[in-house]
Image (cartoon, rainbow, N blue to C red; front, side, top):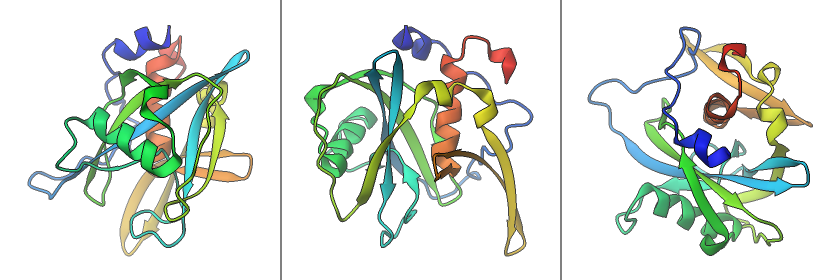
Amino acid sequence: MIAGRLARPAAPPQPDDRHIAALPAGARVTHAAVLVPLIPRGDDVTVLLTQRTAHLHDHPSQISFPGGRVEGSDESRVETALREAEEEIGLARERIEVVGNLPDYEIPSGFRISPVVGWIEPPFELKLDPFEVTAAFEVPLSFVLDPANHQRRSYHFNGRHRDYLAMPYQGRYIWGATAGMLYSLYLQLADDLSCR
């Protein structure tokens, strides 16, 4: 069911999707890929997320999906996502069934991120890379599929205005690109897209 919904065309951006920050023409782009891990847990499915360590140069302390920059040896964005998940959280690639992709997501820092959706049957073990990841946790997919949990926010900094999405969950602040990609997942999987 999930794989079928991920295979359909992505919903086009809506007029109020101001959080989508397309890079300007000619901008220097850094290609990256992330794994969006879906895990069946009883009557629900969960989404696995990580919290980055505070000392990292790019997006320190933020909630994210396992992933990173595309390397020259990567044959595809799928390969990047699987390699990074193995390196960051010790999730063996043979445990991951790739079931789809979400639309690329661009962020103002110049990254163009390709989200790869993977299905992971438990049980499995994680081994977090302490240099990159301080924690891993799961959010119910039912929480992601509730439109009330996708909050639109904005801020002003150094004379710039920015719109972004946020999904606070049990004391954790999921925002920015991760919240935006979760919103894309919601758009792909929600039964009634008119509830947006």
